[in-house]
Length: 235
Image 1 (cartoon, rainbow, N blue to C red):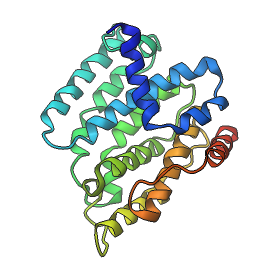
Image 2 (image 1 turned 120 degrees about the vertical axis):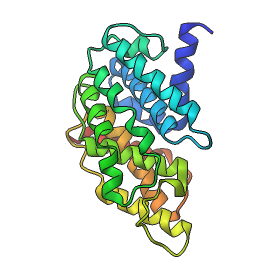
Image 3 (image 1 turned 90 degrees about the horizontal axis):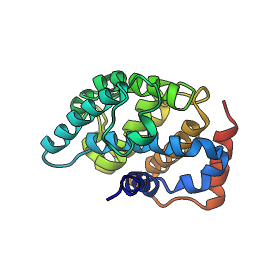
Image 4 (image 1 turned 30 degrees about the vertical axis):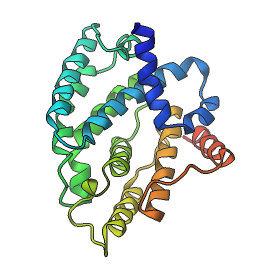
């Protein structure tokens, strides 16, 4: 596989997970889209490692590899296809590498919502620091954590719920944690346009999850367009 094809495969994986972006990208200047897609594709790689099901050892090994890779980016060396777009950006990649091991502990059910956020605070801060350079504006680290935990809820279901969340059954507990996550989600007004758009879609997914206790179909294209428009013009 050529370098170009390998890069496209990672970008396409993210686009497949976030089909809303095809509607929203018109609000992002063309010269910024490629970098934003690469950045969010990288974060999806970390989401997948966090939300692994079954034997965690292969995912843990992959996480260690990513730590080495990001430290290589800090020294202008890259092996991964996403590095073709991201490595030239002089971001604090080593800081993000140092925060990655925190994802291993985050797989364990937290005692409560506060502990869930606290356990990922180092990762959220590192992502925000890199994003401040990659996309030009620093998001609230708490919003990064909220979006990561929302993705974990969608991917891992009951394994993602803190131990103190009560309910009559699993669906009630899933809905309860989704509502709690939405309440804890900080404002994204200071973030980049790209983060505001993706975050707005993630929060909308979470809101639908809170209503049903499971992933639901996307709303109409018009609704997606309005969500993206509102997020793009805010902040």
